[in-house]
Length: 115
Length: 415
Image (cartoon, rainbow over all chains, first blue to last red; front, top):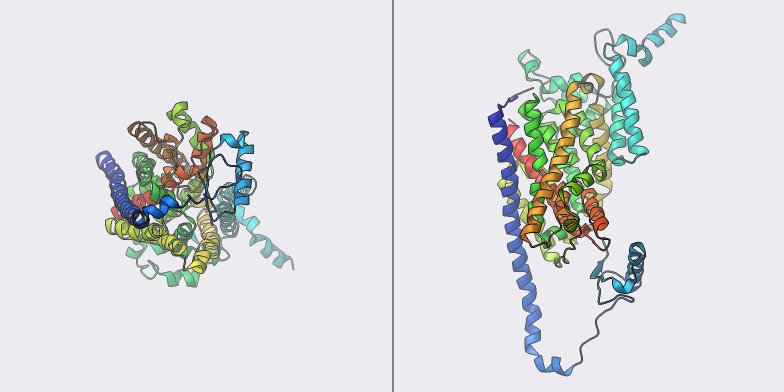
């Protein structure tokens, strides 16, 4: 085979350490990029949400709070993403049954349909 | 009449077991292929690829039994000698330059599987599989918890530990790199790396990689329980933040630019992985995403399995090196799990007990098997524990990590 390389123990160890270091550095830098992007996106999403709230404090005080979309049978409010409340109720009942715990002792945070 | 019958008998594969010097090896490989078929069908060890690999092995060995007087294998579906001439620099020096890196020669002289194998040799199948994986993967858990990337990096420990070990056992640098990448727990990456660095080891490395990936639920739990306490395993992690659609679209673009610029040799794997993911996330290329994750993925899986399995011809597979590779592969998998768990434990300490160290073992990139194992072990310690989404972050980070590890090894030893 062409260009085959034999390493002595020192070079072997060095290459192994270097390789592991490269993977770590690469993914650490990527983590920094993802964190920064995430922060920018979260800040962007917060801005439009805060703006209307600041504009109409009086209207907000006058109007009663809109009822949140609750999934039936949960011990709190569950965020539903692309999920029908009936399906959500069924999923929660199955989980409770599997865990053998009463449904009112479980807290479901969100249910999302995986497409 | 008798003469014709005699000719038929002497030219049959059964006679070939005795007339061909490697006939007994083919016979053993046929038995091994049957065992692999059993594991794939009955035990369901990565069946989509294992059945193809086993059938490729069976076909290559059954059709390679009969050898003519001049040493050629006219009925073989896969010809190891053609690929030796295709790759061998020594043959080039001896005046066989028309064979060296000449796909035309393979097309003209090769059998069915030789032609399918061109896709492996050219690195096409593993990349297309990565495209399908990208189209099936939700990077949301990773984007919402970017620290997962550290666990994905930590879990590449086994790759470099096995690389070091393989060198000590007498393998050259290219072979050691190919053996080490088994620890990435990523079949396509292992196949691509081996094809580029040590194609003669493709059969045993592919079988070891896919077998151990299937055995993750047996390999990882004892290590997880040995390295973590009951208290650590029962940690419930807080809900991940919601990830916006824009972030999900930006992620594959950012990763492609960043990782490929950092390590250009990762371009085929990372590029295809992220392209597939972009097709999924854009929302405007649903048809393409559907093809990438279903039709294309299935077709490539068919071709990849059968052509990789065909490299397991008796004369190459039945060696001491194969046993060493199987042992080193297990070591690589185990140490990758250990690496992920140890960094998971460190994150547990640094976060004041908020991170469950079990998600570290999911840093090996067998998606979603490793994440499921973390979920199962976490739930054993605390039945109300749901670690799956938290473990998916390190799990998909492991895919990127193993691609970077492969890119490093290819750029170092690829010549």
